[in-house]
Amino acid sequence: MNTKTPLDAIAQQLLTPDALVTLSLEDARVVAGYMAVSRINEGTVIFVANQADSPSDYMLLVLEGEVLIETLSSGDSTVVVNVLSAGHLIGEMSVLDGTPRSANCTAQSAVEVAKLTRSDLERLMEQYPMIAARFLMAIAKRLADRVRLGNHKLLMLNQVNEAMRLEMEVKSRKRPHRFTTTVAV
Image (cartoon, rainbow, N blue to C red; front, top):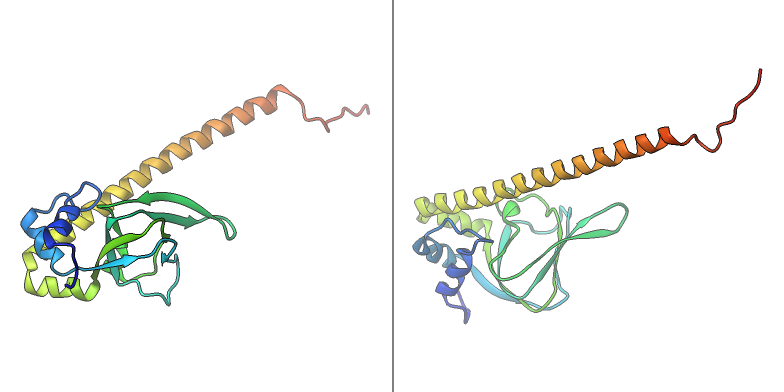
């Protein structure tokens, strides 16, 4: 790895609560040895959602800078989902299954990242199977936590939607529709 960022610094970032806190420092150092560090200029689009022809066989660990995460909304508009900074992982689902990205990611500032490709992960699995298993379990735990959070948010949105529906129903019973007329027969 040709970089000025030492393996220990990458390993420390892997151990943040926003990455894979369940790994040991020794495991994180080994994983860091399989990662390549690179710089991304401000404004660069890192990932584009739903593009089957774009490479999606890698994940990134943000070492410094900020990355804007957006998802597609209705039409061509996007919704900002998050702004990720040092210690966050991006693209860990795609490194596992190689499917297209689920969000757009853009460098909000100059960003330094450590990249782990699917082939790097396969080499890790061959050379250090126990560390690879712990690494994959840490990713699985992170993804499970995100699914649970998403489910919680959906439940809250459903409750708000139901409350609004009930409120509208009550209001519509209190006042007659303005186009309602009584016709004498």
